[in-house]
Amino acid sequence: MGLISPFVPYHNSAGQTEIKKFRDPRFGGLLTTEFLPPLPGRSFRLRQTYRRDIEGPIPENLRKLIDSPRRPKGPPVHFHQFQTEYFTVEHGICAVEIDGVVRKMTDEDGETSVKAGHIHAFWIDDSVPDYMTVILSASDPGMDYQLDRVFFENWYGYWSDALLHESGLDWIQTLCTHDAGDHYTPAPAWMPFRRFFGYWTCVIVGRWIGGLLGYKPFFREYTTDWDFAVAKMKGQPLLRRLIHDSYTAKTSWFKQVELSKGPKPTNAEYEEWVVDIAEQRSGSNRI
Image (cartoon, rainbow, N blue to C red; front, side, top):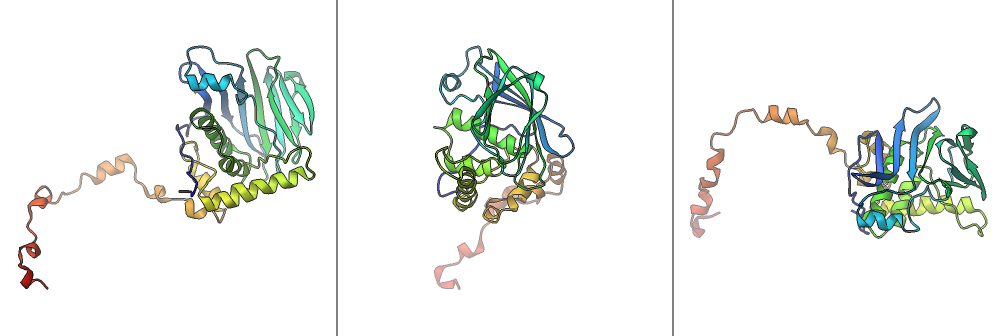
């Protein structure tokens, strides 16, 4: 546990190839992510759909989010220190901002890329009435902390739970998870060395201070390949004390059934009636 209350997930989405966030079980979600087999040299590949709205009698907290400025239309402005990101639009218009310049992309543009180090963001264009679908992937630098399925499962899971069920994003938790996905928020535009300060703020606050306070970037409730996530976190000295791996020794239900078929103690149900001789002795006779 952290000195500041640690985040506890509100839902379980581990093991699903398609995850829907900011959702109502009957009418779907604002953000749908379908994980696809990665191409050679890429750390992940996914198909992502942002919807403009959700029709139907959806929960009040979801409707309130949709009608607010915080509604998810795309990731916030960020940069990747070590990875190049690739975009392919399948449906709708994707507005992409790269180093302050906005470009609108459609399915006619084919695959485009944003090189490592460029400050960028993308979102569903205001002219799109229904939804936008893009294929995303990134280069594979072979690092513990990088854009990959583990990161996206946890970031989208936390993003959805925090906005729907809490007062908003916890700054330290956000930086902690972003750092684990080579996803860094730059300093304000008026500051020099935006990337330098953005990167080190994320590392110092999210990774180091967060680790000391008990924050971790990944949660089993969201993560399909938990062994991989544990291996990633064990590579960070300040996180090792937070990682529990007794789950690897847990037996399956079928094994537990087999174990329960063994011989039972014959006096088990009478144990509470067995008299303790020590309690019968008088105080003067006790050692």
